[in-house]
Image (cartoon, rainbow, N blue to C red; front, side):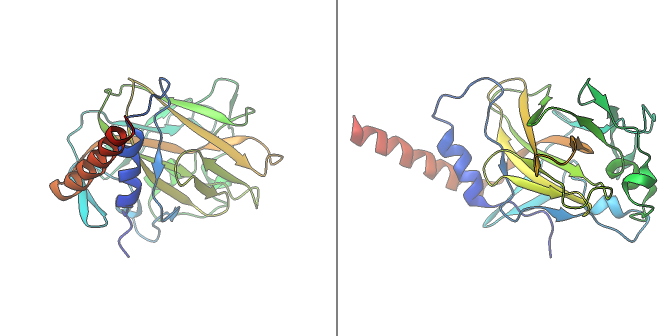
Length: 246
């Protein structure tokens, strides 16, 4: 099954929301309606199948979107292991270690987070086996360096076998939930309404430790013409309803 599927209905939902006034940093992230995806495993390049990169396309029902050149990329993995200085490169995508929150940094090793398991790809192990944590719930990550009005894909990863039943839920349309004991990631899309974007995470249940995150990647994307035409029609429908109400 092709792993990079994002619902066209979800994309259209973004357009319908655009005419409404929204606060800075509060554009709606629409997560893939298919939900979370299991991380690829079993080969030395396991991460290549999951990490989106320049030129990749992924289906949007009747159309596709294409990731544009390096402009707008933000690829970061948690510092974990008390500033472990590991910056994994997966299929040419370089993830820089990053401290998502200042109050608490995770000190567990990659082998502990993955329970001694491996994806088969040592770089991918570092990406998903590194954790940052915070005592806040919900917790917010601010994505920097965006261009107002541009379309972006966001990918998030979370893995942690230490606490069964814990999950991280990412706010937005079709909220995305990643389970602790399953090595998972998810894809979302949004249209920036400022130069930054808030990514909000809730831990579930609320009494299970801290909010955690393993890695985040953000890239610009361009809808293909078929998708753009449908989005335009959705926008015209909104305008027509407004005129009838005037």
